Amino acid sequence: MIDYLPLRRINALYVEELRAAVNRVMDSGWYLHGEATRRFEEQYAAYIGTRHCVGCGNGLDALTLILRAYMELGVMAEGDEIIVPANTFIASILAITSNRLKPVFVEPCPDTLQIDDALIEQVVTPRTRAIMIVHLYGRCAYTSRIGDICRKYGLKLIEDNAQAHGCTFIPPFTSGLSPLKKTGSLGDAAGHSFYPGKNLGALGDAGAVTTGDSELAEVVRELGNYGSRCKYVHERQGRNSRIDELQAAVLSVKLRHLDDDNERRKEIASMYINEVKHPGILVPRCGRDSVWHIFPLLSPRRDELQHYLMEHGVGTQIHYPVPPHRQQCYIEYGALSMPVTERIAQEELSLPCHPAMTDEEAGMVVRLLNTFPE
Image (cartoon, rainbow, N blue to C red; front, top):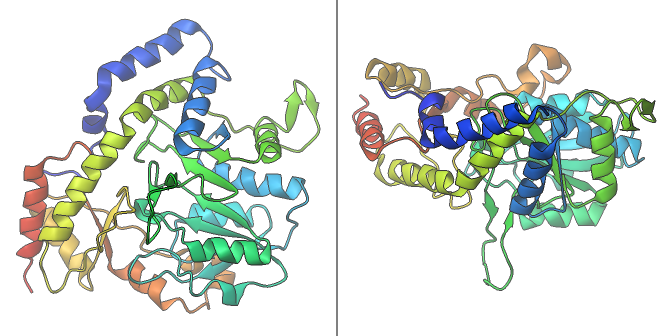
């Protein structure tokens, strides 16, 4: 059986380092807001290329805290609009609506499955305050055109980097004279999830905010600590959202391996891209700007294909079968026409693609896809 994402097998790649890191935290007797957290925040900020990293409870909290901090700073107010891709995971939308802000859905580009930058400017209004791009599937969603729109209208650029740890923005024509920037450092602030299945995954829930804005970072940290900078003094209505020492220590270990793990994901993805040849299966284009958190293919016979692969011992997943505007909790958006998003929801199938996967396993997946009955 080729499992879709065998976390135990993936963590076994560096199990001794993980055990040593966990034991150091246990032996320290300090389990929150300690040295392991400080060290990881510094390491991750340096890796991403931002001045600040603030650990928090999870990726949803990271996005929610960014928006809340902007509201506390007077940049946004209830009822303001945030432009967001229509085909994202629901957490992106929950962060917006939980702050009583309004999501404005934009269709993805069929070629990249990322937000279509050609459609963004037409939905900008006087109430628009930010564009939230989502580096979905591990592919960079940022484009120079999006940056230009933000500058033209004075909008904040917020990145949902939950699926793209280690991804780099590669401009269409790179001179090689300036350093390439990682996702999470391209906008004004970024939310990161370290859910166990992510490219940089903890052994439980964890998240972070990265930003170059010192004032924003301070307010995010304050809001995640009950709205307090000084113990028992609460200037803001905050929440409890923090990364614990065990998760921070685990993430420091995994961060050292992230680039190598992403390279292995790229090797597996390259096999799929170059070797899958079936008229009823559409694989992504090259994707040199992807770290392949998810390898998504599209097929109008998606459910048949998933059943066929499972019958032959290959696990897959579907991301995401019901788009946010079709969810019961967002029934007010149910009348929206989002044909590209809805087609993706009906046709997307995610293949196994992880650093512990062997060439033989990937080859078996390729052979099965190519022999899927037409």
